[in-house]
Amino acid sequence: MSYLHPPPSPNIPVVVHKDFGGLVSEYKAMTEVYRRQNREVRLHECRSACTLALSLPNVCVYPQSVLRFHSAYHRDTKQVDPQISAELLSHYPPAVRERLGNHLTRHYRSLSGQELIDLGVRDCTRPPETMVARARQTPVTTVAAAPGAPEQTDLSPAASLVGGVRSMLGLGSPQPSAVMPAQRPALVASLSIADAPPPPPRPRAVGDDEGGRDGVLARLAPEPPRRPDRTAAREAAREDVASARLPRLMLGAQPILPTHFTAYAVLR
Image (cartoon, rainbow, N blue to C red; front, side, top):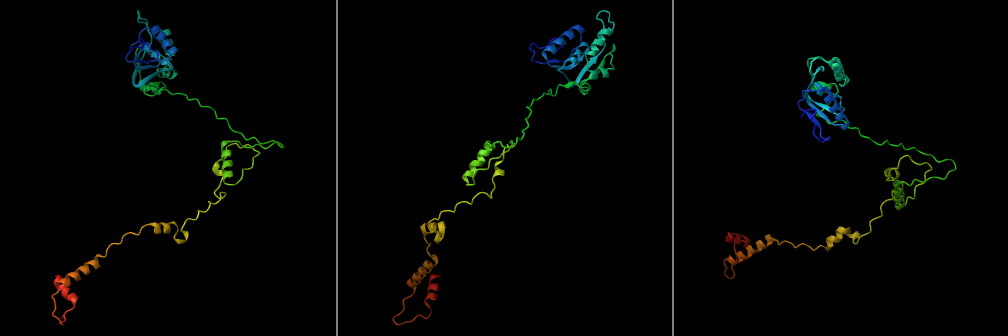
């Protein structure tokens, strides 16, 4: 895209990829159009009369851009025109003019985009700086009541909340202040833990004398079933088996060994 052939919409920036310059009058007229539109112009490679874009307030370059400067000359005679050259030089920023030595020559003088950025030209890779307007904060002053004047009561929401809480706790309403506070009082600063009354005692429950609530629940809960004594049952079964397997004695005979020894021998 060249400097003299921009996109039709004024909201689209003009991106100059490679422009070799031309008549100073044509570039000067197009520069004024861009100035009225406040249009953004981004320069990649720009030579000769195209460098008039540096006079725009919304122009930028890339660090790898290249701008080439030289004096103006007549199209037909090829002779340098000092007046047009001086006018061309006057449109550059002061820092750029100083870098060029405040004069132009017939030969090209090149400046890189990084050099121009260091001289104050905006970098296209960075967004333009924006100004943010903020409202000025009005200082709050403390107004004291005149002697003999009726006392003024603070009607702020914080004061109303403090008064309601003090009334619920039985502390009474706060005394009206004769001086309007500069800041709203904090609820934490108005009430303290020491001023709060102790909580009411817990109502007595049924069965407090016999273990309290846990005692009542313990009595109401059904007793869990007891597990059978397997050891006693096993010993009884062994005795039954042993008695069934013991040999029958003759009438009037007495066993030589005790019964448990005999049962142990039979069970084994």
